[in-house]
Length: 69
Image 1 (cartoon, rainbow, N blue to C red):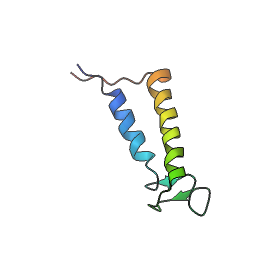
Image 2: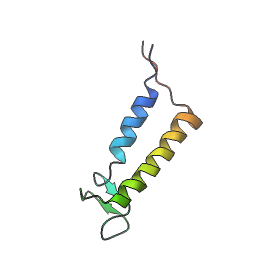
Image 3: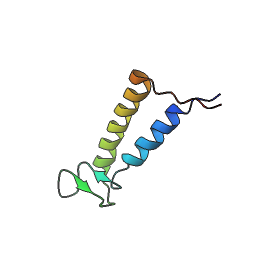
Image 4: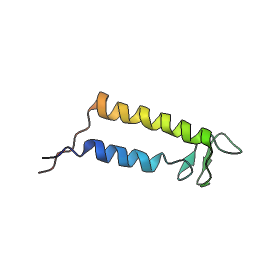
């Protein structure tokens, strides 16, 4: 019986927080840009910090678990 909660949460957050795919914070010319597919080092860092914060909240504080079997 495997716990798929961390895998699913990490995958969904990775797709949603990929810089430039849905949004980019900070953007190249504005604070937030949508679907521009161009990234910068600063936006990668910001999205990494947001990813780490959200995955910590979901896996440690909330305790998301999905069991199969």
